[in-house]
Amino acid sequence: MAWEDVLAYDDQCFPAPREEFLRTWCHQSGHQAIAYQEDGILRGYGVLRPCRVGYKIGPLFADTPEVAEIIFLALKAIPTAENTIYLDVPEPNQAAITLATKYSLQVVFETARMYTGQAPSIALDKIYGVTSFELG
Image 1: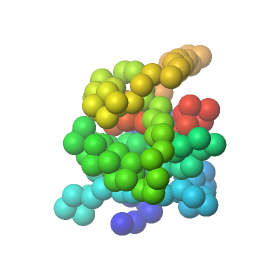
Image 2: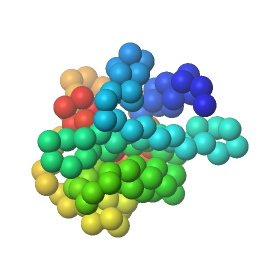
Image 3: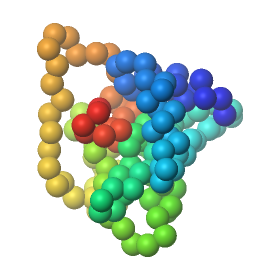
């Protein structure tokens, strides 16, 4: 899969180009990235990273709930021990909330995405997990 495909997919879900950030994020020590392709077309990707306690998945971007679930389960299976998995789910994507609920993720805290001016045009229906609530 071409790196340009990942960048083009990410552009649908994040309001600004972030090539250098993504390259570092996906290749950071301890991070694991997984992409899902269908007929040679990128349909989603996700990254798992270690936290002080457990692991966090983010971003988790996918065309459909089914693709999101495939990527989520693949990332969730990477840790070798029973560990807590965190996923920062955007409330406007009901399918993302359904996925989190299906796998017994519990609400720990909530945040609000707020903008001055008009909100950017991004594909919220493809965002199943934000990269990091600190970064979006």
